[in-house]
Image 1 (spheres, one colour):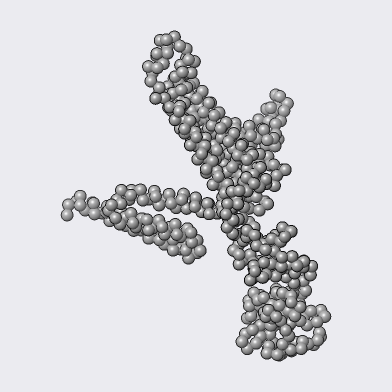
Image 2 (cartoon, rainbow, N blue to C red):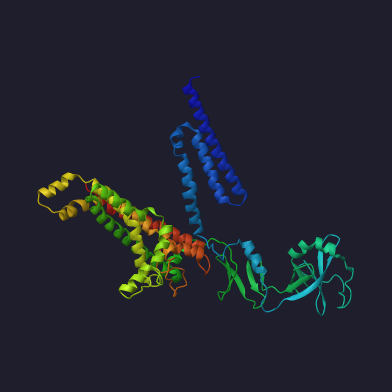
Length: 512
């Protein structure tokens, strides 16, 4: 066997081993996810495994083998989150609707009545030969009896207060302390009811509490009735609601169709802050992109016209804002613009006598974010503008000089159109980046100043992405993942639509 054939066989064995290990790993992940209840994610991983097996099994699909890892990652990290977000946007999933229907009903059935207080008892434990438990409750004035039956009746006449608990009550036999300890878990988890139709809960080895429930559930017609007022609570979008619009909590996760999308337009609590945030988001993205590329173009003209060594120096210096992570530079800006001890306000106070409230004023907060966005964005714009300027043929500038044109004429009729045509697609990408510039908002203003007149968590400097984040994860009024998922979908379509429009404009700017 030649050395070349041996090398080919080794590479084939290595590639086959890699494929087999990858497929088995994904299959194992899928099996574990299924066993832990993550069915949808398990289906996605199972689908990826099946797809890889098909691709690597047929020779006709050989070209796809090179794309298979990328396709698998695309499905797992993009397609699945997108589908999951879409499905979540059609539900009421949130802090008040986290449980399943069965769990929610169980929690509501455990709510105590506010009209009747609790009664505390000491108790004696009894059991039948079949293991059925009963409690002889000793209160301050009387004995009471409790079992797990739906209708409770005393198995024998109960003793009077002051007498010793009998060893036998009908078919029930008194248990000693050790036997009670052995049955303590069953006693604590059991649903006991006494002769007064109160619910009895064992709280310790020696104490039990009796109370009346607030609501009773009709399993056949699926509604709750208040035992205090007689009010009926019927099911509506995962929540039991009365005619007076009183809600029982918790609710449960349920499909509500397109209501989250409609609420963006019809619900004033959502639509008013949404459209205000959208308008500021568009303004921030447009102005941030325009200012960054305008300043980048001006600096590129200056740097490009300088000497070789000065050009290198200025390139390095101007790139620093772009190189440094925003998680480092944003806190620096917050410190510089601090209204009390920030150096910017100290200088303004010393020379002009003013101390602007950068974080309390809506206009100043938005202006501050545009300044920071400009500082972060112009180095990249400068780089692409310099690259575009250096691609301009020198003959064009010579022709302008021969015709007697000045440098400003050359910039106006040659440099600017050429650069604009070259960087127009890049500006579209910069606009999309600024439109979703969550880090600046969260690290500098956290969306503030807040809108105190609104119940929504949207502040005056929030963009759609930060508003969605606040709605889903930091809203003190109750988290609403379903609505946040719907707004996330809208952000995607808005960004895609604006990008398509910008690309069409960019294509018109091309120099043919």
